[in-house]
Length: 482
Image (cartoon, rainbow, N blue to C red):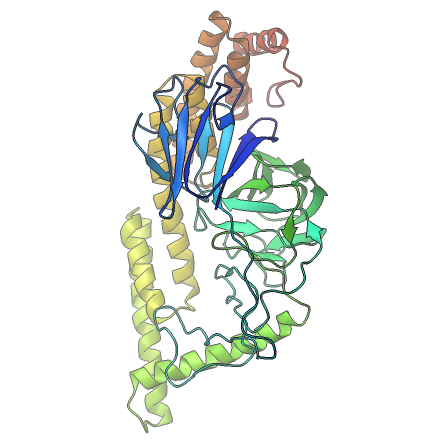
């Protein structure tokens, strides 16, 4: 079963939704379309989405304004794969395509103990030999790893449903978590940060230990409050102390950017999300049990390394020597990765850092360098996409380029370059829209240019912006230009 949702990007409200097992859903302005989008920017027969057991695809049916997938316009009459975490835009609408997970049955027969799962080993090692199964072992992730969806292992997956809560999800856009989906825990208030004591843990160097607070407002909307973080909290590109936002809005913690997706209710407390990377609410006793088991896991991992590195019956000195040798080998790889990063050879830096982390997963410099290199590679790709959109010289291209700019790392040189290119295109483009009496497009372009550097707008440009604001009857003035 698949769910297709159309959301108005500016107003943040859901326009239409459709659920389908297998087949296709047509989208357009005509009344006979499966999803009807009433806008002059949408063609009568704009596109269609096809779903089957292999996944979902979207195909532009020769529309005037096209279909954007992750900010890039797709070729007409050519199926393009889409799914959870993929940004699909049609004019001023965002299309969300996601699988609908069916409720899972109770594991085992009545009177039988719940099924257990084997203990998870270190990355690349699989299950530890001789370990078997550890009763009551929970499927919780180690700190810094993405959480796994589904209920804790060893607990029944069926049972009576929990009270209905407001379903709000954060979909990562760019960075190390790109495409991951986070279901917010079913509590009225929660904290976000790098520290393990937060309700939502995001292990990234740009995050403070306790970065922000999130409050549910209902209807898929939330309020975010910055907790004096080092790198700030942003809503739709603006740094905020406290702000409300909802479906379609973008919220950024430090350098981690997320799109809000909310269904306004109907989820179950403690139920896993649809897809990977969801956050599962745990019972109160879960945290101390998790830390105890994490310590046991770390000890077993060290013993396994010793077993691989030295023959049986080795002395304590030999064991220490073997361990130090492994740590030294990892440090050499990480040092080489740092040199490659300094030379802007990001692909090589990432590869070397990953090699070092395979030997010493706890090497903090390796974790940091891998994250920096991954973000840099991501930013280079986004820069190319942004320039391609800018070259279209139309409102859709400007909007797509702005979204790409907002999703890039704050300290990225490529982000600065794209910002300069945006201003150089938005100002003359906005002035041209005003000449053509496209006042709303004029206002949007010049206001966006103001956000990128309002103090550099000429008096004539500011005058054009104010005039377009009045003529387009914009409900609120541009906040970036006085």
